[in-house]
Amino acid sequence: MEYKLHKPTLRVVKILDLINNYENGLSFLEISTKLEIPKSTLSPILKTLEITNFIEKNDKGCYIASFKLFQLGLSYSGRLDSLSMIKKQMEIVVDKIGEIVQFGVLIDDMVLYLEKVSAPDNIEIVSSVGKKIPAIYTALGKALLSGFSDEEIIEKFKDYEFVKYTENSITNIDRLLDEIHMVREKGYAVEKQEFTLNTSCVAVPIREDGIIKGAMSATYPIFRKTEDTEDFISKVLLEQKEIIEDIIKIQNLKLDFTNSEQ
Image 1 (cartoon, rainbow, N blue to C red):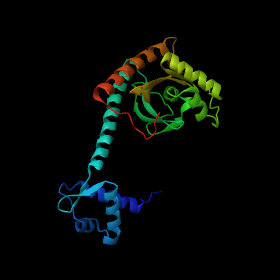
Image 2 (cartoon, rainbow, N blue to C red; image 1 turned 30 degrees about the horizontal axis):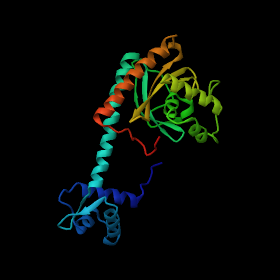
Image 3 (cartoon, one colour; image 1 turned 180 degrees about the vertical axis):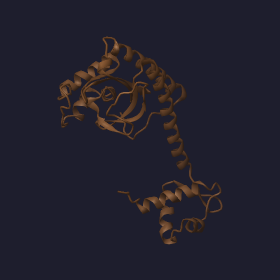
């Protein structure tokens, strides 16, 4: 079923897009004519956009894009730069370990997957870019949660409905805290068939100014697991984590991919 766009919202988007394309600005009449918007409808929209500093008037009385709109563009560009940099480092990890590597952030009690680099010998996994999965059942989620104190985690999951997806799933707060303590101790998180069978995962938290803002993981099939797999993958991930955090610091990049804070 095709979604019908919300006309008032679409009208605002078209106005901003139009004004942004005219460096010298557009008059009230020009905007009304070009977009075929009645003056009575256009007037309050422009007034609101002006009051909220998304547009402003130049010395000729024409509407132009404001610096605030420019800042939003820079912010979006910055996020793209950060994600692009992280993806390049993820590709290095894939080259070294030959397994799928993903990057995600925490949204409430869920992991949101933002990037994925496939491996030559790909396996099927349930996660994908844009998908959300309960954090406590994933290595990414545990790595992200390790930045919270025990008290904060207890408060966050006090009314949580634990689900037993597999025999290895975390089903209570004590087990969750044990897992988080191990992440803090080792520097990386592990998921062993806790959300789906036949795959395991290792993940490391990514920090900006000492605060965990994302996490990077590698997923591998159980049939390729050896006694050295976890150590090998965690070592590669930790090496790249340090490189990513150094680049973030040197280039003053931001990892604010969402409005949530940790």
